[in-house]
Length: 154
Image (cartoon, rainbow, N blue to C red; front, side):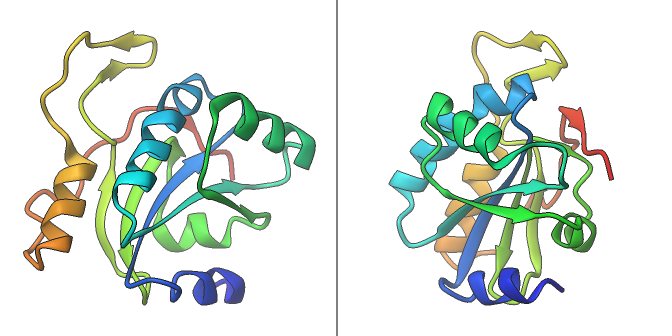
């Protein structure tokens, strides 16, 4: 496990992660709702993770500025965290505890039918449901959903 990541996730009892790529349209779309969740659930740490070395730091910073991404961006240069968690696309969301046990993995919600196709209204809030259950000290019912996004290139 990446030592810096390991130390970082011990800051709070739970961490929500969003894997990002600056050129992924869904990351652009979901960064704002992700930031809004980070402001709503202050007892949980929120992190955006960028894996690889495909983009310059300036491109990642521009992405964060343009999307008003508020959570800290962790740079996973060698894909250690992506491999450890089994991330496959961007954006992919995880709720983990301080020892990196995955409590939820997958899509934020059901707003995206497939790449390029969005619902006007959505009614499944997978990530929020997992956060709410965790904060209430209940078991997360739906632990995994199929994320839709840009392939995470290892």
